[in-house]
Image 1 (cartoon, helix red, strand yellow):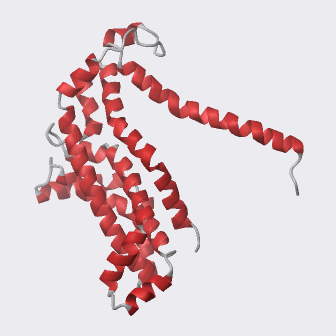
Image 2 (spheres, helix red, strand yellow):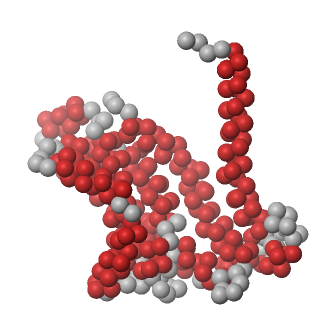
Length: 279
């Protein structure tokens, strides 16, 4: 049944209004963060929180960059890059096995891995902490890589398995006729064709791990090994906090994510849609 003119007119008005409302909800906090980062600590206390800074003073940025911020940044880049590469490789190999190989307990194992998505990761903090201490990895970047990979695998395997199930079987059969074994089929056929799905899990997990706080807080303790989410602790005391400096750290920390999402949002959407549609 065709919609009435009133319903169509309401839709034409409601959609832009809701879009502008959501734009304000997502943009205003970011603008507040950037504005405050240019204020001095005294100005932040004496003026309105929404008042524009009196001058674009870069003293907070100089102070942050002259401190251990770059060490935190290097640690974050190292941990996230290594973790994402391992997540992509392991989840792609597991997804290929679940999507294309028929073996006993295939569905049961896949269901068990997917069930890991509903397990709160924070309940694993104590055993992971004890295991890290026993392995001698505590207070090192490698203490974070294992938990990051393990907690990211369930959703990554789920996304890639559904994606690989949509790849035409004819391509696999043609590769077998050419004499390719399972490893050759995986690396020469499925891995190249899974580019959108791999991009999706790379960007999704990269953003999640870049902002991860609790494991980094529990498994590291020194400045030389901590990651960016912990940099704000350098500007927080027992009785007071340097709010402009903290928001400067948050601004600098979020910039790589803003750039990554600006260039990768289309790949995320395409990867999600490609993995959810039936061929």
